[in-house]
Image 1 (cartoon, rainbow, N blue to C red):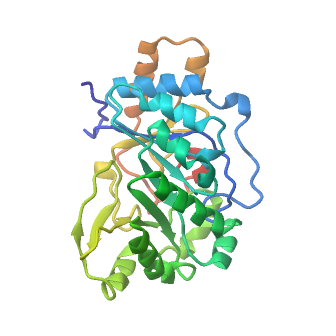
Image 2 (image 1 turned 120 degrees about the horizontal axis):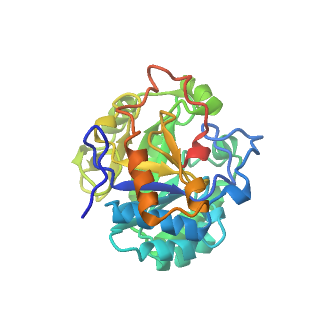
Length: 326
C-alpha cells in the first residue's frame, strides 16, 4: 500500500472532507451571526468530483475520511455520497461531524450508507445558553442525538468547545449526560481562527483546569480510543465512558498530525493554523488525468508545515473554521 508522507516524516492517512460551508447554526467561535459570504454553488465540487478526489487519496494510502462542513447534513444527497465513498477500496473508516439539528431525519439513511461513527458539536445542555451561543434550539440536537443512538452509531462523540466564563462550569453536567447515554465526551480548546476566533481568545481556558475539576468529582484513569484524531483520553472508572482532551494551544500535537482538509471548493488545506493550500478544482475541471490529480495531492502534502502558529501569530489566520472544514 502506498503512503502519503510529508517532508517531516508524518504519514497522512486522514482526510477531513467539507461537503458544504453552509450551516444552520451560528456558533460564536465559528461563524459571525450575519455571515453570508458562502462559496458560489458552481464552485463547490460535485459528488462525482468528490468521489474522484477521495478515490485518489485512498489509492495513495488514505484510510480515514470524515465528512464535515459547515453542517454536512445541509448538502443534498449526503447519504448517497457517503454510500459511494464507503465502497472505495482501501477506505477503512468513514465518519461524520455534525451539529445533529437534522439528524433525527437522516440517522437511519446515514447509518445504512456506511457511516459508523459520529462527532456531534454540543457546548452546553442549558437551552438558553445554547440559544445564545448558537442561535438554535437545543431540543433539535437532543432529538438528533437520540435518533443517532437508536440507529446504532457507535461511538457517538460529543465535542464541547470550552469557553472561560461561558460554559466551562458545564463540564460536569455534560459528562453526566454522556455517562447516562453511553457517549464519549471530548473537550476542545478555542482556537484563534478569523475574527470570531480572535474574539474567543479572551475565552480561552487551559483544559488541564477542566481535567482537574472533573478529577475532584470522578475517578479518572488513563484511557485510549481507536481513531485518527488528536485527543488524549481518560476513562471514567467503572464505566465504559472515555473523556478526550484536544489541546491545540496548551499542548499542541503538530508532530503527530496525520491529516489534511479538503474544502467544499476543492482546496486542500494542510494545517488549520497556516494558509498553506493547493486548489484541485481547476485541475479537475481542466480534464486532468488520475495520475496528474495524484501528483497534485502529493505536492499539497509536501506543503504541510511543521507546526501551526496560533500562539506565536494569533492574528495570522483570516479564514473562518466553516470555510476550511471542521
